[in-house]
Image (cartoon, rainbow, N blue to C red; front, side, top):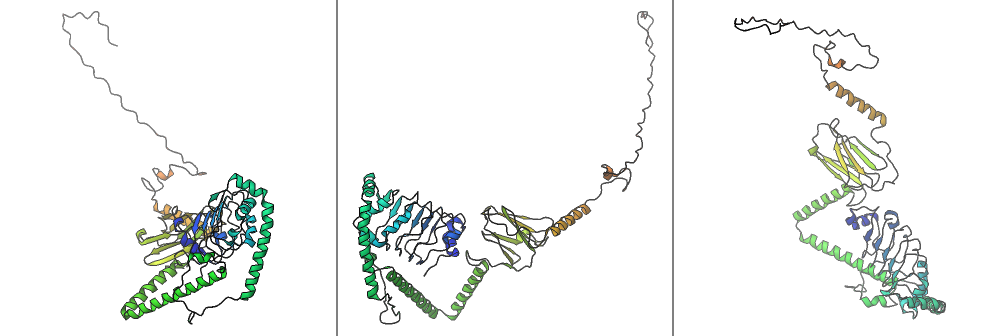
Length: 457
């Protein structure tokens, strides 16, 4: 029989990239599940939950789903409505074809305090045979708007409230008769469940369950569960028989090739821990690494060699782990919390060659587990930075003219604090020599009167 596990939920949450913290809807139908579990721990934001056509016999472990609006429990083994009082946002319930009988019809009162609850489906349950079933349900659930697909009219609501006391008295009598009948049936059967020998004469070659069987009162939850287990055993036996026949038909060479492929597939799945399973951490290259985090990001630093080409590094960031392959060697590390893969960034240090991956947390409120790095502490980080600065300074050649320490040494343009200033030689500007103007004598003809021409100074 099936179980609800975190791995199963991740597989069914492919539309949400396998993330569970903000998952709004999930469908877990037709998986032969017998118990509700895990959902309240890993999917607290769930709004729509499909669990129809399973073997669930009790409503439980749903009290943490405060955002749940629609729960589909059709075709299960439910006999009583319970443990839903704390699902504050619940609006719609589907209990079609279950085993809620008249003696447990009053358990619907557990939904009375839900402020948003407005739609209920009970078709196919034994309790619907009660003459005043609809009137009773409308009377105890004042906020109900639709029952079994039909709208609740104001007239029905008023009449149901007026006749509620009388209907409750009739229900108590019918419920008492129902309980007495069940006690008598259990006594006759001796509360024993018949076991069918799958290898004996009672083995059935084919089992089919007609739809009308669910309405048969003799066909109870125990019988339905037993029949499903028998069908599952037959399927498993048929699968094993087919595999055996196929193996006999294959040649030794083909069988060896198939085994090789299956072993390779199993190895890859083991490396990844399953498609969405637990991560198997590894460091084949022996590289130093550090994992740290703050309130918003998870930071992973892997110390790849400085001169290794970035094109040789293959990086894969998943919600729960990081995988990097360099020169055929794999390093796989688990994140302390789930991250946003689409917003992750990867950078390569030009100085040390280290690969730094920064991924935002999916849930910023998650507790910080790695406040400091696991491979290097703060003192080592400080020494590394000092070494980088020293190497950078050593690569800078002094710009000078006329020799180091000379008067034209450009390193002395800016004086350090506390350093005495040297006297500088006064800058003497050489004067330009005066150039005497050349005087040219011009001969003036005798017939020109120069008496009115002023003398030149």
